[in-house]
Image (spheres, rainbow, N blue to C red):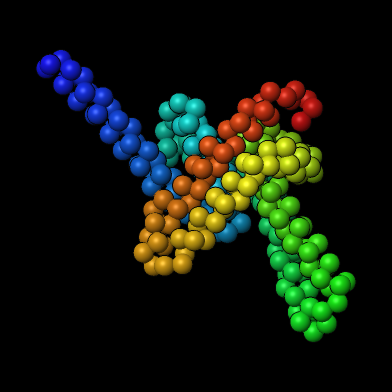
Length: 218
């Protein structure tokens, strides 16, 4: 009986220890993402570093938080900034065009303006899909040509359509957490890290698929 109780206490302690480790990871990585993305143009490298950290942890790789995060943040930084700026510019242009077409529709609700607005919405969604799928590609083949990475990311978004839908829902976590001051506190402590952790879970099979491909063909 005592032996069973000791075994139970040991198992409970191990589970509590694992839970505490994950809470610490979520909080610390969230703060690191926020701090390193303050210049705005470094948002993509910051999110990607957080994503790679959780990818490692989910694969049972115990890497040190601070040292590994900044290593992942700075490696291939030029490529990350380039990709981040290109995708951000595409989304910005798309959103601006949607706004313009919306104004046109209010002034002149013609089929041409309606089609133009739909085209812009599809374009913005496509860029968002591509942006999300560059994450698993950047941790497997980070030196891939940008245009090739964009095309392959778009292909993956269609191949893994269910995961794409889940990733889109996950994208709204930081936005939802901004609607109330109390929820904003959650965003400050674990909002961004929770999002990239879920991305690491959602895209785990995508990474496995990409790693199974011949590197020379990617």
